Image 1 (cartoon, helix red, strand yellow):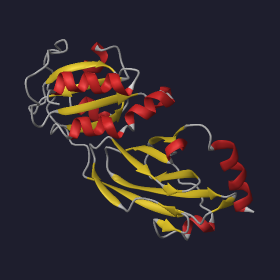
Image 2: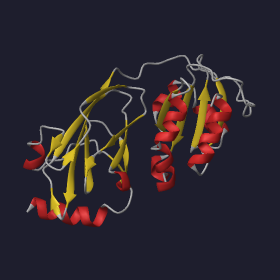
Image 3: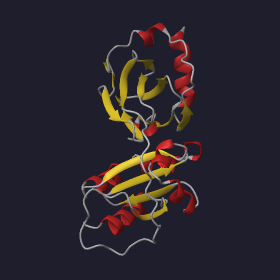
Image 4: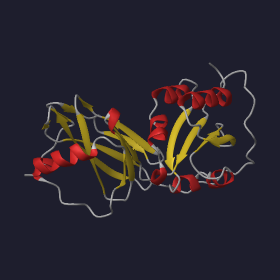
Length: 247
């Protein structure tokens, strides 16, 4: 009976991006989910269990499945997430207070449901106060001659107003590589995350007119550039090359 219900849910909901948040009360899980103890089952494989820092922002998970995948996220604290069905991908916010996030998935392959697979995200540490750094927010700098090491590139979005086009940019491997290959750090936060206030970025967000925006900081935490997230991947890559430097 449970499989029939899930089949209907999958057929109706897999075609569109999904935006949701985990409630503070943990729902009762079907027996099939409770028994899912592995990240890999016949026809479906999830990333292995992982541990991230409390200020990671978001974690991206991609399922390896020949068909479509439906997700369920369980956490003791309220978190947000959104899915990209075209890539069997889910992007999950990291609770700044720490804790455990359990992710279940089921695939629909050739009209049949796979068994459930599960993976866990352990969030280490907790949100500790840090003296904010609130320097002036200058306009975008000219092209630097070479990339600066240890820069921080933070994408700030409102998950309640995220579009599929923006989701594709946030999940773009080219965008992530454009940051990491320049020895910079990639971060993604919901605009309501307390981490942004702790890091002193709330004033920069307000000055920029709110999300979705990109904030670039140097190794000392000073904001060197901020801008609205462009509408295309190519424009984002162009912006990153201009601000971070290098090729």
